[in-house]
Amino acid sequence: MVLPPVSQYHQAKGYGQTPALQRARRPFFIRNTITGLLLLGFTGAVYTYSIMAVKQDDLSDVSMPPPPAENK
Image 1 (tube, helix red, strand yellow):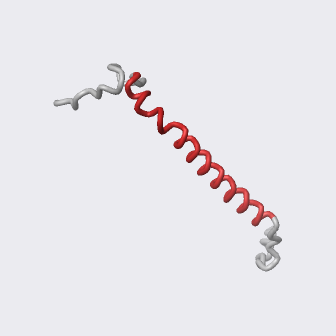
Image 2: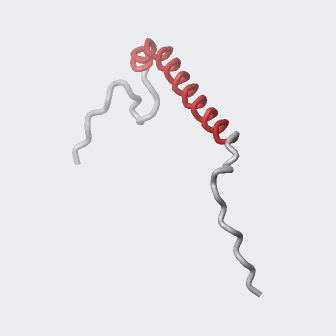
Image 3: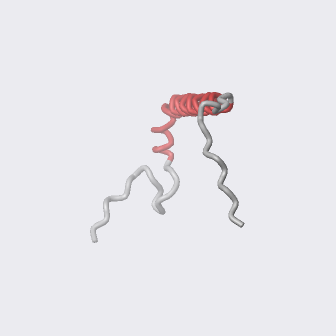
């Protein structure tokens, strides 16, 4: 079995980041964090709006079936 070459940006044991990878990712950290927070905020706002919209609906236009008769 032929293994792919080991990346020079990861530690030999397969976990962690080398200083080179940390330096390469540093310029994108702030933008990625802001993007993640915006996505989280938008998702939370849509979820909250949906819950509030359903909460105020009284469902009076939905007919309920009669309760089942008891068998004795």
